[in-house]
Length: 148
Image (cartoon, rainbow, N blue to C red; front, top):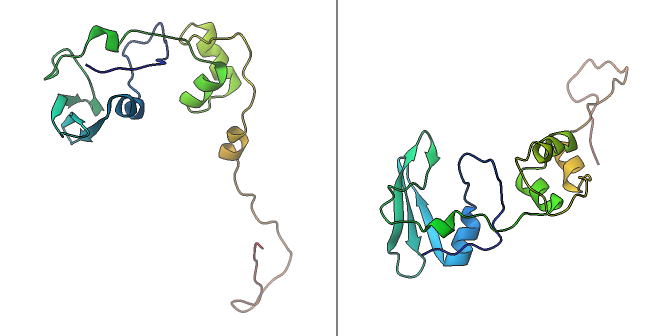
């Protein structure tokens, strides 16, 4: 039997998603992924606890899994904070995030609006191109640019 704590609640999601690292940490197991199959194994004994086939490129835990997964495994527990949802969803823009909240796709623990996190501008920044200098060269390495 697997244990998961602090599970995020998504009321209208069509398929439950699994946070693999958290499952591994909370249950002392590890995943072994193959092209058409995956296994969940005990970290100490290496015993196979769960296995199933991949479907359309996804590794799906289904009722037909080799071992049965308790229903409590899928039940929602808590709603998360705005900041946690923002990080878990890959830092969506405030417009996209508010759309998810307003359409009840996700439930937040507070009604606080999304503010920009420190990682967002860093992840979306790009290098500026070099400006034109007006210098013409006639031989290789006559003019060198460097970024110090």
